[in-house]
Image 1 (cartoon, rainbow, N blue to C red):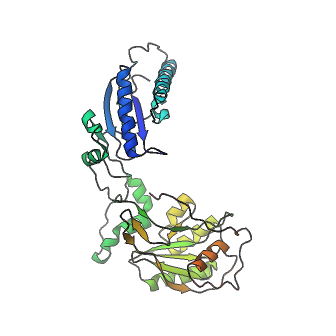
Image 2 (tube, rainbow, N blue to C red; image 1 turned 45 degrees about the vertical axis):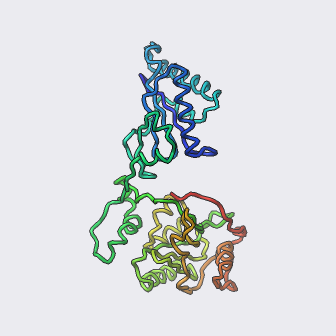
Image 3 (cartoon, rainbow, N blue to C red; image 1 turned 120 degrees about the horizontal axis):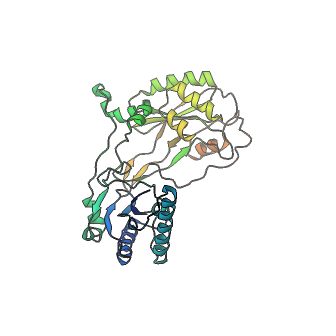
Length: 343
């Protein structure tokens, strides 16, 4: 460890908002100036906050030749500067500052979560306010690679790529285009509360016909005995769910057999989700209507069903025949509304 940067990472988290993070960045600059430590640059990270980066202020003072001892001495000096900053009431990520091996986002690179470029700010720009800073930071639309398709399905390219070949997308290291603004909606999870079981929740692209989807689902119904399947649509895609309680591995087999677009999401996160409410933007306008029940494919259920999902569908006004349904014993808890961020 020789001449590692001394970096302060101020993120918007917990009680900190972006404006508060800006104020903390200014405070760190003033604190370092009072200590005689020169700031090389301050930058808007492109996402949650700011970075304040300095050259190693103790480069000439640490003369220890043993690499490990030299690094330990540098860490101790960083711990002391962190404690002094904390005593001044300055909030930042202390672990980043102490860590001599931490890599800070390089100015000029794109933050793929937001599309904003990590932007270096001079003192006047840092003190100008959040609105001006965001205007200074360029934004790029980071798009997934396009595949030549016929004209009638060209608009569905994004869904096709993300649903059919997510492995390729992951290897290429790209993300879909960042949303301009967050939307609020209600999703239902495939997890059955109080158990390790799940229900099959399937997803299909909006370019497919309902009859085609129904034909695929009927084959899965016959093969796995998943009982009645409820198909919903919102104009952009179709979702389908069954009340059958099965293991995660069984869900993956069902999704694979149906060619469901959310198979890889299930493998990655252990469960799947289905939107059941309308999407509302920050301006209060409806961005996408709630999915509508468009078809019920009836079939005999072989095995047990999820009581919480049965009660949830019933509460929505969906008629579910429960006379001959056997519910799994442990699944007696109700589905609850929780807040989450889906990136």
